[in-house]
Amino acid sequence: MLNQDSKLIIHNTLTGRKEEFKPLVPGKIRMYVCGMTVYDYCHLGHARVMVVFDMVVRYLRARGYEVIYVRNITDIDDKIIKRAAENGETIKQLTDRFIAYMHEDETALGIVQPDHTPRATEYVPQMLEIIRKLEQNGLAYRAEDGDVNYAVRKFPGYGRLSGKSLDELRAGERVAVDSAKQDPLDFVLWKSAKPEEAADCKWDSPWGSGRPGWHIECSAMSATLLGEHFDIHGGGLDLQFPHHENEIAQSEGATGRKFVNLWMHNGFVRVDDEKMSKSLGNFFTIREVLKQYDPEVVRFFILRAHYRSPLNYSDQHLDDAKSGLTRLYTALKNNPAPDAPVDWSEAHAQKFRAAMDDDFNTPIAISVLFDLVTAANSGDANAASQLKGLAGVLGLLQREPNAFLRGRAGAGALPDNVIEARIAERIAAKKTRNFAEADRIRRELQESGVLLEDKPGGVTEWRRA
Image 1 (cartoon, rainbow, N blue to C red):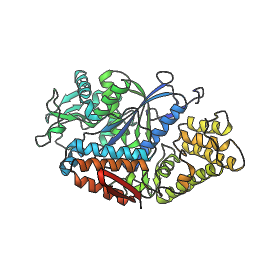
Image 2 (cartoon, rainbow, N blue to C red):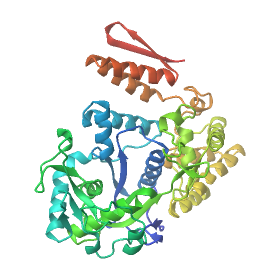
Image 3 (cartoon, helix red, strand yellow):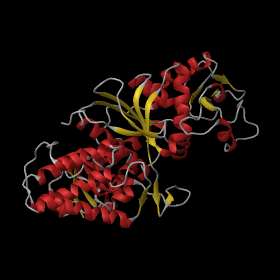
Image 4 (cartoon, rainbow, N blue to C red):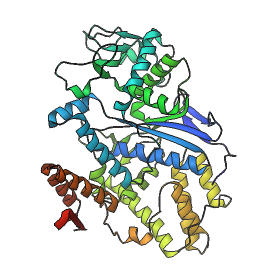
């Protein structure tokens, strides 16, 4: 394990510069990352958030820190309500299903589960308490349409995370002329229930039946699990404004204390140099990509780029990542060595640490892995052990080399544990006589090259096509 003697430098979005990181409590770090809204399959943008902050936590722990890592799940939202209604199912049925799919994607990508994955619907009482404090502090008001809104102009410093003044933000804001808000920049804390909405998306509150706004969810979950003031808050760059800006306004407006010391944002995923989006038709789910590429190749592809840089997706870039990962595994195959702790005093490890201490510079850290390949192939007896140990800090090269190199599961195939989980879901669906879902899972596995055979006694055997 590393010691914490050297400086760890991290870029802070709040200040716009790299800073020496010092935790609020020596040796301990509390980190919150905004997670997924679960009404559809996870896409490559989600994959980047998963992998980037998994890498951050792995390195912080390798450095000897005790890390409490929280990544939330948004399981109540307008899109969720709409999709559940379209499907003719409850919100919980929809979100439970896509949470299970999300966990399968995480497992495939080698993600270590966060310490806490809170669901927003479990923290409504805490949200109501924050809203009550904001109303008490004169920062929240009930509008004519029944919603409770946050009065942005009453909070000093609004816009400091995005680096924009209120007037600049107001100039770019598009709002309906008949808006019930006092100011177009005001955002909703509590949404008044509509008569046609299902009962499972409504909660009682001092302001009437309704549901929480999106931004208040993260303020409540982070404060409950990490405290009102904690070390690191992360997420995708698209959340910097308005979501994270609004979190600061809510949390600090309610407590009168600083919310977060350091903000981290990973860059966008781009496809052919355009931002990935459904509207442009260049949108890829993790599952679509894993039909063509091994999950570790996708992880390696994400980590080869610095987390704050745009990540340009293309088959060519993934093919390059596959070639690079193949070279690393080939070196381990040709230079077998026992697993051993990393020797952090060794020159390659020191270079790796210097890169990671400089705002998690994974491109340089990965270049050190290739330097170790050269050393191992040149007869350095310790290089292979160092290669596997340092790669493990990034969540790479932990498989038996031949399992990767001979493509035991085939490039892009689902890992065994994911297949077993899907089969278990299918068996459960059959037990509840949900045969449509059972058939859908069979088709999905078949499309991924997995053939099922049902045996007597409710046993299902599988093989790869």
